[in-house]
Length: 278
Image (cartoon, rainbow, N blue to C red; front, top):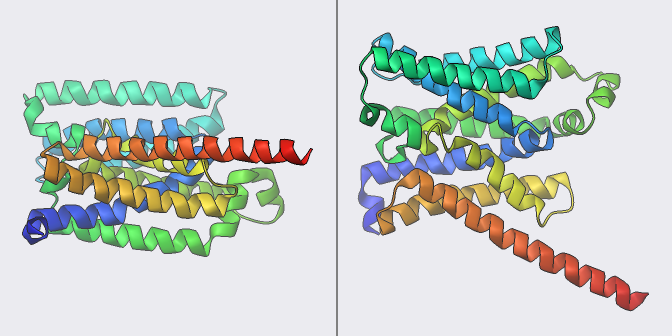
């Protein structure tokens, strides 16, 4: 295929190969804990991170994006623990505040919208070799870590109180999970952009939930759907000459629709079978 002879396309496919399944894997635990809005807050805080990076004169503002994301995540958990504010209220305040601060700073720097287009809507075709290595290390490292500690992570997700009784350091595990999630969101912004990044964390697990019966099945199918959505969307965008980030999202949504229809047919067949036995 001519597509595979292009170095920029090779890098794009490698990043999609590493980050799409990783997002889908983390998304299973994220959605089970009803934290989808959290990832949205972190991704939108990335706008302030990009603005700060440009203000500091960084050639690549990814590190300032990660730093701001981690700071916002820490503030969310600190306010949740120390105040009586609702979690949704905290995240809404930080999301809107960080976006507003980012816009003001970008305006003061006289940054044109076109200069940050890649961060807003994704520009996977422009990723560097360094970003491919970062995605690979993060994807493989986190993937191994999740499967090694799958049982305690699953228990924390299902029942935090029971996990504490069993001696699992829940607070430390929560902060570690949030840190890994923030790093993943920051790197995935290059894949889908600030506006669309939450889709890759939410859609594959939701699609997997349509047709699976337990957490382990959901994890495996979510990873597969994330891989198909990410890599398949990248390939489609190349052949159809479409923007890559939105194509990945629409491909993932198409997979969700397929699993939803299949799940409904499966449930209907099960109900008919039970009625016939009765």
